[in-house]
Length: 395
Image (cartoon, rainbow, N blue to C red; front, top):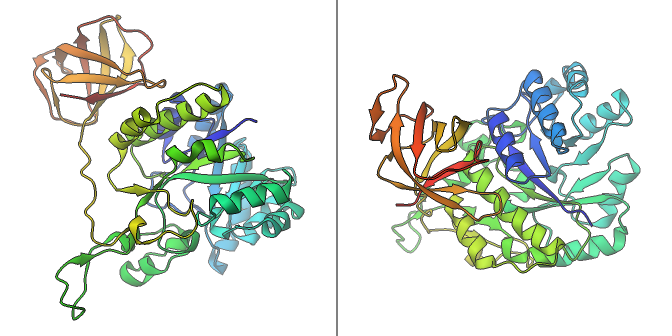
């Protein structure tokens, strides 16, 4: 069975890196009707650009149209979707029945996936959407592995299943939250979530606990559960995070790609090594979330601090001049005397040193402290095929 690895892409660059590091498909949000309003998102020309890019690599693009519609959203959707339809995307991920029905009215052959916002956790609900023309359901994050296996057995592959394997876990049922509305006047269900559950709260007059209290769960990470997950018919494994960095996207993609491929090709893989790599992109503690049914308090972040995320993402290669000289795009502070590693898609990372850094005036410098700036570097060994690769500081 083909297992799709589906990665988030908050903008073109993130989408490109997801595909570069092994995603089979990416999901993107347009400027409207999507639940990540604070992400950069894509205008129509950008949707067409990333779709053409993905298709050139035989990969897919799904557009996310998963807001919960109020009356004010209805009037503008038809002309909006007609433009989406012209971009040749592979499917839409939707939650609201109005959006679902309108898409099918405009183009009955357009592929529609039912969003996790619909909280599909049983086979009867999945078949309801199948009867109405959906080709896939994105299961609620609350679906345990035991329930997933039963879904697979009952559905007999009548409709595709998509399952979350990594990323944030909402305090509410599959994202249907009102905390953001109440605390920051930002409607989470039309794209404005302020992640109020992750704020720190001080509880008073309760056993005199002098600690800050959060209401959020640990992030989901099912890397160590992938063999079980691939024993059932899951069409797509999904990673959350359209607002995450390209370093996060590249690292998480590479890790899950290698685990999935090892299973498919019946090869041994050292999960501990992959997990160590995955942790380089995490800034929160993780757990298996709902995988083993309802999570207990060990999977919550009531008082724990976030994990410190070292800013070791230094730059990306953007152009090869010679096999030792490259143009780069800086991301964080680094020095010429640092030691570096290239994150490779197969996780066989390559270490190197920098001999020289030149700025745009062709002046040699020792320190880079300007993010999002182009520099030219010379390195200590010949390297090929490293354009569009992530570089980290390791010492």
